[in-house]
Image (tube, rainbow, N blue to C red):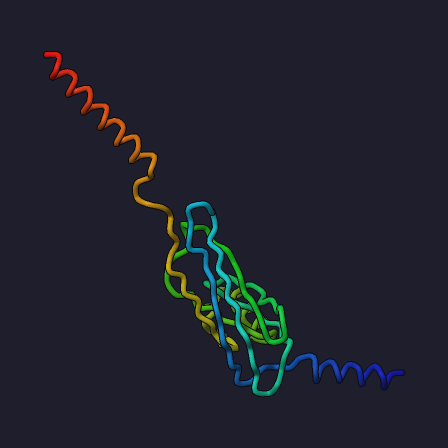
Length: 166
């Protein structure tokens, strides 16, 4: 009985903690661009991970601007990282998403806990997400233009009437 438990434990250690070597990543991304009816901007990065050693089904974790998020696996070797940010805080430009395996994530958490820079821990790989910015509507609302035009027409009509009566 003891030998069976040891064999199961060795199997779990040998095959359960596979690490990815020479990762090949292809990524796509999406961000919310229309901010006229929303309060938060959504960021979504999907990527496919191929490892040269054949490792798959890896738990991955993402670090974006000092915040950590889990990477969700939704298909074999397909992952997704998503987060939201307030419109006022969501800057336009490129966001770098650093992805870590379990070992790297443990080192990252230790670095963050000790108030060290996350850049001290090297990620498994990085993915870039480009956000072009969020459209927050025209500079002048149509209601303002309609009221301004109405007041202008009324003023011109009233002025013309006053000149005719004099």
